[in-house]
Each structure stands twice: as C-alpha cells, then as structure tokens.
Length: 179
Ligand SMILES: [Fe+2]
Ligand SMILES: [Fe+2]
Image (cartoon, rainbow, N blue to C red; front, side):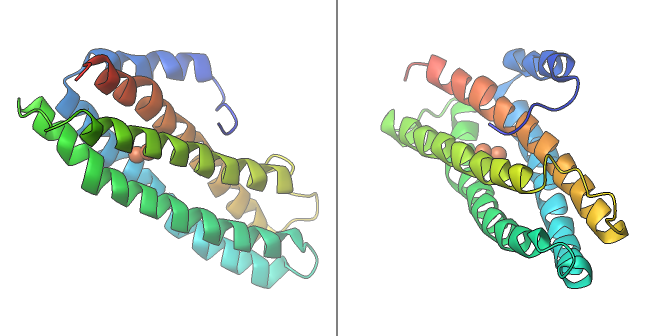
C-alpha cells in the first residue's frame, strides 16, 4: 500500500468504527466521501501536473515523467471507482436489503479483482512518491510544483484510508458473511 498518513493509528481507530455500522451506511460513506475525494483530487491533479510540467518541466524534467504517471493513475482509478459503483456496491446493497446474490462467486470474484486493483493503484502511487522524493518539492520549486505535490500528498492520504476501509472493513465483512 502507499505510505501511511500522519497519525495513522488514530485514523485507523476511527475507520474501525465502521466495522459495526450497517452495511448500507458503510457503502454510502465510501462513495460519498472517498469516491468523491478521489474524483475531485484527480481533476485537480491533472490540471496542476499539466501546469507544472509546462511551467517548470524544463528545469525539473521529473514533472514531465510525473505527468505520464498521473495520466495512467487517473485512468486506472476512475475505471476502478466505476467498477465498484456499477458491479460490487449494488450487489452489496441488495444483500443489505435481504436479497442474497445467486452465488457466492457473484461477490467473491469481484472482491478479489478489486483488491488486486487496489494493489495496482497503490503501486502507481508508490512510484510517484519515489519519483518526487516523498512529494517534497526541491528548494527552487515554484508555486505550481508545490501545489501539485500538496495535492499528491492529500490524494495519497485519502487513498490510503479508502483502501483500508474497503480491504480491511467492507470486503472483510462481506467475506465473513460466508455466503
Ligand atoms: Fe472505492
Ligand atoms: Fe476500491
């Protein structure tokens, strides 16, 4: 997974509270908060990386590389959010309303696939972190690069919480239902 956010132990304790919440509320919370944050931050990231690459790419060629990485990451994460919202989450809401899926494979296979995708998007983020020395701008960086790195850090933290809430709370709960 990507880098642990600051104060992770306390954050994890807050996220673990969702282990006891109704399934429907948990799914809604993930979409309302984390999918929304991901989409807002990705849009910001794309604008900022474009600007930073244009303004500072000549002095800091890593920004040109970062632009490619951001593009790849955003394609993958958008497809992933869409797959969850279209495939898995409606099935979980059915389950929450007492309508079990036809077969356990209906849920367990998507869970495995989506978990693999979490690993893949986290891997892309890890690469961006490595490229930027942990999102620390160089001493001579201008505002566009500084803002870009702040957005990368914010999205990294949000994604970490998001993936924890899905892998360790939501998906773990679905598996524990032993369908
Ligand atoms: Fe998600
Ligand atoms: Fe996910």
